[in-house]
Length: 57
Image (cartoon, rainbow, N blue to C red; front, side):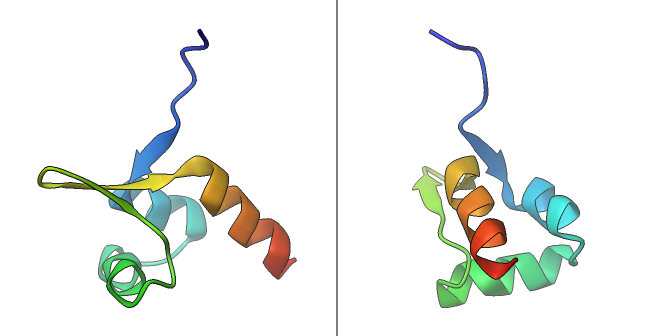
């Protein structure tokens, strides 16, 4: 099995997207940025993030 990560944190997603941490959490809250809840953590699937960026281009 590959060791490649499937998810990233909201903070990492914000950094990759060039937006603030609070803006990223707002996007998660509104559903604009799909996320997965794992206990107390909120994770962003990399495949979803890549698809969102490709569709916007």
